[in-house]
Length: 306
Image: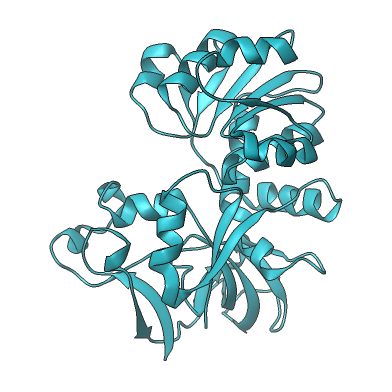
């Protein structure tokens, strides 16, 4: 048996519990990974709280079995399924999967990449989800070299990746964040501005123009400023009905092996930094989720088995 984090009813972090589950067997084209670290997402809180029921099996809403959380992880391959040949037992990998908050996960090998040598486990476990969300968004918004990109919530999990990817692509980045995170944004290559009343004017003081706006938080203020400064090229990955009214595009995430490999290559080249706000064992998952839900987390929150 092994351990996994589950919940059996919608609610706050207190509904989470660690239970014993069978060690999964890798199916055809899969490998089994012994998890060393798994990143937490705002979606994990949303799903557990009942705010994304369309993602849950119908049986769960009718009182079915426990539901798992987590969709990115890093660890060591310890079994290889039939037909899988990209990885061998002992390989260190990172990627995306279902039910990542566990000791073991079975993962399609196409969802994994090799972990760069020397990359800390916590960073490896936090690269995939937010990194691919940011990469997808900037690709969909067609950010080009020489353009100026405005990133809202630039110090957060998705925002910090967006800043660095855009800089690596040759764009100039202006990022909104609280004053305590301004030096951090400078270290990532962005020009920081404080959010709050007068945001558009402050952006104008540091940038002659804004070509593209990427919003990772979607408050009324950030959406209005983005729509006004980058009409037609403003997008958000957060949910707010105001976005549609203002013409701000709703952006999603398309996870692909190529996108994951691009992120890994950026990390290996020293162009992508993974900021970990804190690590928590599975037994302290409720505490981790409360910290994540409180907002203003710099970077990512990570869970570790054991």
